[in-house]
Image 1: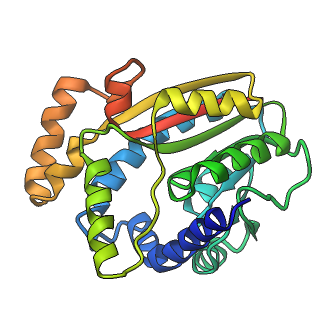
Image 2: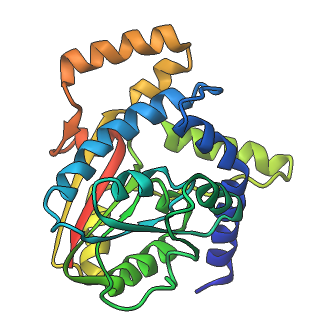
Length: 264
């Protein structure tokens, strides 16, 4: 793995050390930032797809929450009767998780080198993790998850659409250029497409792969004008697109969350 790839991964860990309090507050319904509203909306829509996957698992299935953060998603799955545990590289995140849920197991580790034996889990989930890692680290992580999955096991994760209609792709590079002028470090973001993710997963060895677009990404723009306008706009979107589950292009590639599901 290249030095640059390792640097990007280390930067992602530092970013999550900084953001630990934000996620802790958001999961506890303490809203202190505008970005929390679209985060919660997007998360609730993705949770519908997670529940669909969980409903197909056998009772007592083993689940790995990869990038488990503050542990709230791990706990939610454990309460459904699954043997859920987390792996998390951020020391601040894992500290919160262990404080929040001392009855669950949270292990420090990275996605491209999991501290887990082969064929251990029925289901691996990773929400908003791989966006902070480069393509090489993503590819290695997909292969590593395949290793720890049982035969027939499922890998569920989210990515950032390159062509999402919140225009984060051009905005990110514009902001990165500005940060470059001031010699300030700016976090990395991996932008991708449904087609690229399908190719990467098949290359890693998964037998089946499907991608789903979730949430109209313009909702993120709406909330920048305040909660009242954001709520109003979200209602309009729901009237037009219902549960905002996009399985066909181009809407799938333009959505706020790209869900990827692979089967071993």
